View 1 (cartoon, helix red, strand yellow):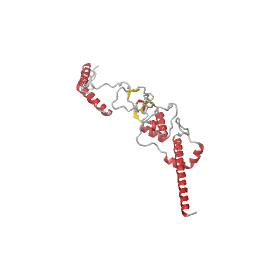
View 2 (cartoon, one colour):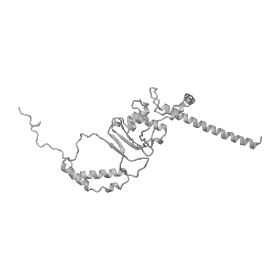
View 3 (cartoon, helix red, strand yellow):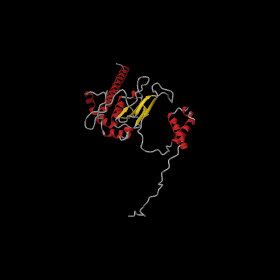
Length: 278
């Protein structure tokens, strides 16, 4: 066999070996990802919290990856960076299921959402969970179960999904989501405008402004003569909200005075300097 033929054969064999190595590397990465997910779902007492539709690796694959456990442990870490809280409308989360209780998971979740306040919070956002990986969805489902949240948006988009999510505590029944009649921005068929109503229990604290009917009539009249047209010309919802509140606060300052602190009209009959006579 000539030298060129030998070199050509070596090159072909080299390509075959490289191709096999790439396939092995890809397979090992897949096994590592799956085994890493299982390890993350194992609780401190040895129980396993597996969300619905999670793929479980086979025993043979687990044996193949035993030799890599040390490396995997160093790669397993808590999620970092800014976290947007999302939910899935296609997979139900059982409230009775015990969430995973690994120490670092609890610390991260408590940093994201303090448990003493979640029952009265509402979380809104465009998260497009449908396009997220299964691992991200699994983390989300664990977060929802851990914080006892529910997804309140049932308004479908053009594909029948909910990409914009509204999360609320399970004990907070004051969140209602419906399709909005008007939109502040051009409508995206994948993100229909939503009207979110949050009912808040009346506070026992008294208002600092006067509650006189006369002042209320003045403020109503002032609101009717104010020019609100500039709000409709603003495309940014946050700017619209700021301008709206600025106008309302301006009307209050103009028409509704603050209450005066009540002073004692009648002096005390007795004090330490004038003891009570017998």
